[in-house]
Length: 336
Image (tube, rainbow, N blue to C red; front, side, top):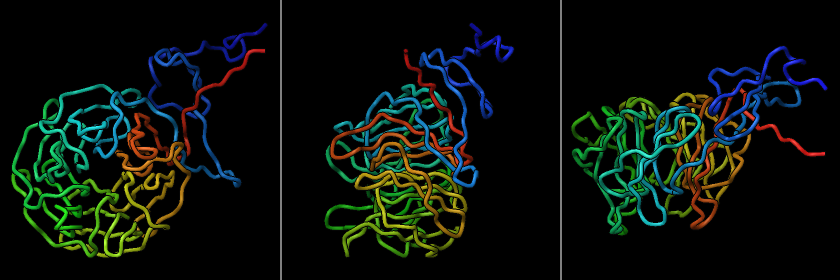
C-alpha cells in the first residue's frame, strides 16, 4: 500500500503547533495537539475568497468582561470576571496561552489599548464593586499603577497605544449613568477632550492611534437598548458615520478606524461585521456565540477570546479570523 511519502515525494512535516507562513493545501502533524492539520481556503458560490473563523488555543482562565490587545499571533488578555474579579494576565503566541504577571488590581469591565509588550489598562469595576478610575501600564513583564483617569467608569471603550491612548463612553456610578466623556492619555496624564455624540457603554472599538479611532454599537438608556450607531474620532471631534447592519452591544472589536471588525455580542450572538471606512458588511459568523468577549488584531487577522455563552458560562475558547479566507483545519479520520 502506498504511503504519503510515496504519493507526494516527502514526509509529513512534524511541528509543535502550526508552522509559519502556511499556504493553501499544506499538510502537517501538530505534535502539541496530536492532530493532523491542513490549510484550506473558504470561498463563496462564485469562487471568491471569504473570511472565516477557526478554532485557536484555549485560555488558561475562563473569563468574561475582560480586556485584550495586540495581534492575532501576539495578544494579551487581562482582567475580567471568573466568577469574581480577576487580575490574571495571559499571552497568546498564535498557538497557546501562557500566564504572566497579574494586574495590581483585580478588575473587570475594563478597557485597553496598545500591544502585547506595551499596553495600558484603565477603568472598570473592582472586587468591592467600586467603579474604577485607575490606570496600569504593561511593559511586557509587569503592570505598574500610574495616574488615574478624571472620570471613573466601567464598560468603557479604548483605542491607541500605551503612550497615547483614548478612553471613551462607559457607565459611572448608578446615579451618574451612561457617559459621553472622552479622555486622552499622553503617557503621563489623562485630559478631557470633546465628548461622544451619543451616551453609551459596552460598545466595540478599533484604532491603533489616539487621533483616529472608531466606536460602534453599545447600550444606552434612555431609551434602553442596544444601538447601531458608529462614531469616528479624528483627533479633535467625534462624527457620526454610517450605522452598523444591526444594533448590538457587548461585542469584541479589532482593527483600525478605516478597517475594523466587530464580532459576537448580546444575547449572546455569533454576528461578525466588517467596516471598510465607509460602510458595514455582514461576514461569516463566529463558531461559538458569546457576549462580553475580548478582541485583538486587525480586520483581516483578528482574535476573539473569552466571553460568555449566557449567564455565568464563562469561556476559555479562542477563535482566529482570516479575512482572506485561509483557515487551518484539523483532519478528521474515521476507522473502517
